[in-house]
Image (cartoon, rainbow, N blue to C red):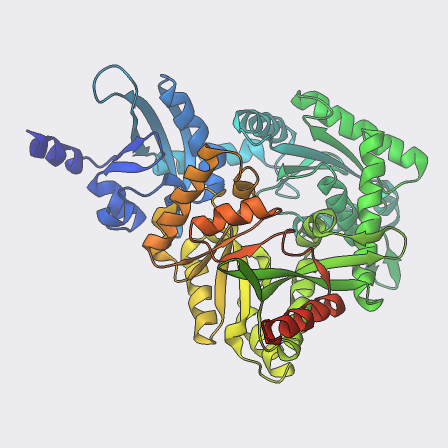
Length: 560
């Protein structure tokens, strides 16, 4: 009978899947496998996030699954990427129970409505677009903003949205001086400039006349909107050359943020519009509706400017924290982790949490990574007895120039042994695109460089992924060491992680060891590589060199 049911399911042209409470596939039919281009064995027992990507899973699929596991039937229409093709799908989630009582699975039916969607979209195009610029019009703006707010409300990670009301001020004068045709041409050119500085996931709409609205989707910080506004001001203000005259477009931008300012779509636009009017009155380029937020954004913009100057003024430094190898009762320095610090002329020594996110957002982090790589490779020559690790940002790790940059850094340093250079990437960033991560890891291994997985245990992956990763070393997140000496439950949990790693013949590094009790428990579990304040705080290179010399002398001293 079961084979008959499988036969019927596989005959269906709809996509049918069965997903368990761990968000893993337990059943997929032939149509589903064929459409996404994977064999059934490559999908079964894998997480939905690994198939559709973490962002799509977290923002769209997971909220529906969670509601389904709570007993709701869910029906909605969405767009999915199947290779190079985009398909409009009608998706239905049905609660499913193995024994008829507790809901154990979600049964998902997906029906392709692409042709219907394409027909409807062509008809809707005439009603939803501005005929001059081709932008979404005010009617579309209202629909999109309400939809984005609803999506944000359904997510569990408190996504924010921002509205930028872009008021182009001197188009009336441009039309009077140069004619409406030139005014229309400049408006279209300005629209193109704005498009170049927003993401594909953001929206640009024509509100009315020379007023445009940008919707920023899924921003991490309220202050991010100000960074975008400044970029738009900079690009819009570049003069246009018309015959022998330079034509400059004046601009004011008002910003409102969901949910900080309001939960209502109409009110969100009103707040942004009001802020743009006040920006004009105050003579400012952009202005937040929330004045406190505006001041924090100005501070963040200043920090960005100062971060760019930090290279020229040699304010960045690398500190080094010991990584020890436990031999019985003795802990010997086996390596060091290089950690970035910014010696700010006014704020003093600043750690990564205060500026790395900003560096990521603005692209400065790639320059920081490259500088750090060159410095670390130089240290390898000076400290021939140990290895040195350093974190690589997600943007740098995904850059095809990473391997050539590493090769250049090693050559510049006189070609030290590449096996003593360890590059770290966090588990979360590695699992965003596992296949791409594996390709980069393998390229680095060809150079003799090992990649470590950092912060292991707190991401969305599991020990099952270990078999697919060619890396040999995993740094277990420091959170697991916090109560290691006092909590038997924490010890059992950590032991399970360590045993899972070791079962696949990989090495473990425990971070966050702050006292001898934690070190003793970790050693009892068979962990030999450890890192934390108990063995040494991050310190300048000169102090670390003294530490190495002291350890070397102690090792060479004859025992009494």
